[in-house]
Image (cartoon, rainbow, N blue to C red; front, top):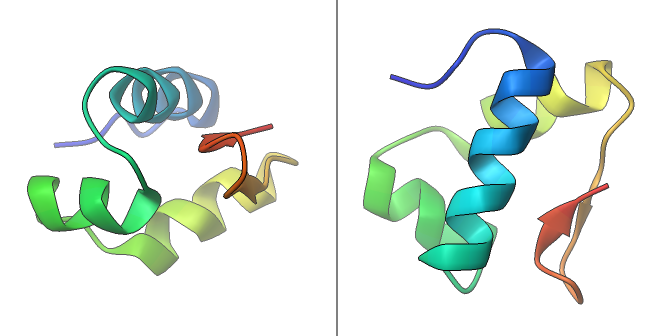
Length: 57
């Protein structure tokens, strides 16, 4: 289960992307999570995924 707080979610997702997954797609597949839901939650807090750096900023 992913954190519901956007700031905690940001930290969790970026840590997983840095340490375990080479893309947001592979993270979502590996954790069986909905990519659009993650992107939407983080976008509502002002964060966007950057494919080049493989992190949300």
